[in-house]
Length: 263
Ligand code: PEP
Ligand code: MN
Image (cartoon, rainbow, N blue to C red; front, side):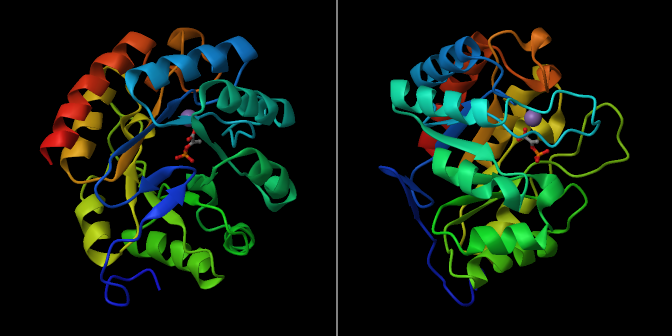
């Protein structure tokens, strides 16, 4: 069902008043985790001013260590709702499991499925039963085919509103967190009609190098990017090392906009 052979034309998703896929290019920006009212509201205003069309922020965080910050959970969802209300930005946040799916779905415009859950088949089926857009991130060791089959799980249950997201794959390289597989973008666009996003933040994991990969992701034909932005990256509770501050984000957005317009 996700194959271009079955459906040759690009799938376009309606999210609020936005159209994702097709001609428009979208930037989703915000912190890795929602940390406080001040943090999420200031970030929402800053990314909106710089031209982002959606806000991101994790409330239920799938951390590698159980001793790391796990997110504000329900309080984080409430703060996202407040930021959405105050700025008019649509929001995306990660759904970590089926137990919290309904609460997360009620608070978000796009459900994010994280890399670690790309093959959580019960979760894929459960979001497949919903009629809400899903941003499905590529598993850290998943092939392009496996990503497409994970999307197939969702679409097979009737939810056709799926965005595929390349976010870097496991690598032998130690200088970067992952290897952002930009090959995946033209491959996914050729193989599938679904919109394709890129996450340069997790893809490279190095703050200074994120702007270059934002530009590259735009130039390679992605339908949008999702970028981590924090008011004070060194003090972030998660992923500070790859988060842009407001001025870095604003500068990159000027470059990204120019590339997107030239495409
Ligand atoms: C995130 O977006 O903060 C995140 C945890 O991403 P991923 O699932 O790609 O690691
Ligand atoms: Mn993160």
